[in-house]
Image (cartoon, rainbow, N blue to C red; front, side):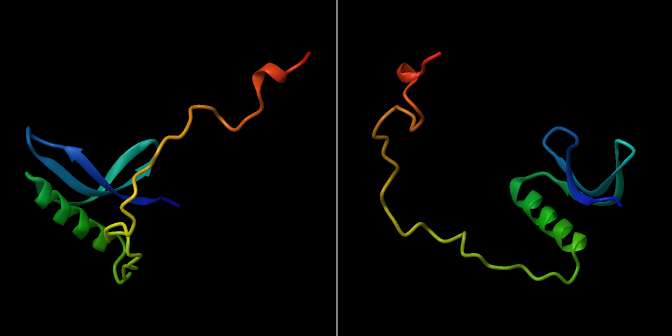
Length: 92
């Protein structure tokens, strides 16, 4: 059984190729070339198209991960000690 995946490969300077490929005998075998992106926006569109072709008919599930965080608190470091045992208490 081979796993098909989206492959992003650097092309000419400033471009990225998007392909559908699978791994066979330790090598990537290109099944389809989706397109070549010359900007981040083009790359996002091509990767989305590759994902759509990879799993046709599969609907996406909105997990709400694109929403802004509800809390405005930032992480606060309160100490530098681990919660493990005290090395000074070890005996041989």
